[in-house]
Length: 339
Ligand SMILES: NC(=O)c1ccc[n+]([C@@H]2O[C@H](COP(=O)([O-])OP(=O)(O)OC[C@H]3O[C@@H](n4cnc5c(N)ncnc54)[C@H](O)[C@@H]3O)[C@@H](O)[C@H]2O)c1
Image (cartoon, rainbow, N blue to C red; front, side):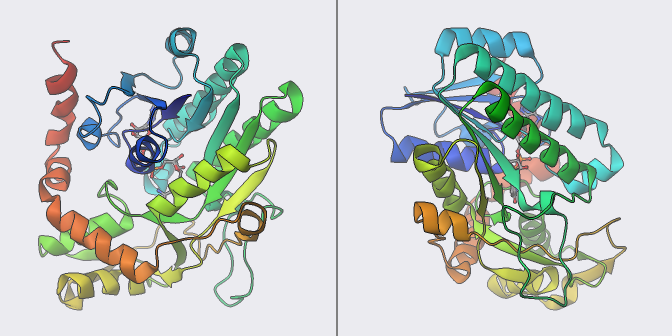
């Protein structure tokens, strides 16, 4: 089988490619990525020469390029990770989020329909549900919760979900959607909370916390997310939405303190900064459907996952240092410039 993974030079997409090549030996994996600031080809260096792997630098919005690739490779399964993914950036400049997350997904769905893709999966986020109050811990998002996105990022992801489901209903494209809580683990770009805190702490720089730090997120180790998507692709029902969550709620301040503890760094590095506009208070996912229907549950306990993650950033210092310095942007030129 040939699996097309979009956004595979980013955090979760790359982890998914590593996971898939290991879990499904013999499958061919194609990666389409535009290599925006968030895409880092060096992340994929371990598989670039793999006989079953092919990297194609393409914009999801480039319909002709997608069409050429599908005509050549006829991928049976398509998993769409490619997105602009940083909420803060969406608040500063929403347009690129609409372009990639909405128009890019629409282009991909069209080409999947044209070539009769057997399975399409849209990787979405719990942020499409908006937020929950801090004082009602019993409330959690189910797949039936209304879509109430708060940021341009989550609004664009909600649009992509709806386009995917409409494509199933109207054209019969066998498509599913998963809405996952916050992921953490190796290869995450150091603008996101956990790697930013690790990188700053290791450099003895301030650890910026938005507002009071009381905003709650539900954390899931990235490999558990990859396993959930695999299961949904194999056993999920087309037309359905599946929530994926870590059952591990923690406020941002507690998370940052935990990172300090793992690294042996002082909490005095923590500094409070002006809160994000429209900052969601609490996300909490009810992943009961995925658990009951497909037997999924998170395998990595938080204690173990955060320890592994911190160790990974300690052992891969050059990876994130090249990002912080901007040097990683040269990697594509080095690998592909003269090919
Ligand atoms: N990180 C999380 O905690 C989380 C949680 C739930 C859902 N998600 C979703 O999972 C997906 C992956 O998230 P991530 O954290 O790995 O993101 P990321 O920002 O690390 O990676 C995104 C990748 O998409 C690529 N990309 C961006 N625009 C593109 C375009 N126009 N054409 C082709 N490629 C393009 C980038 O180059 C990058 O490699 C996203 O759809 C995101 O909404 C993320």
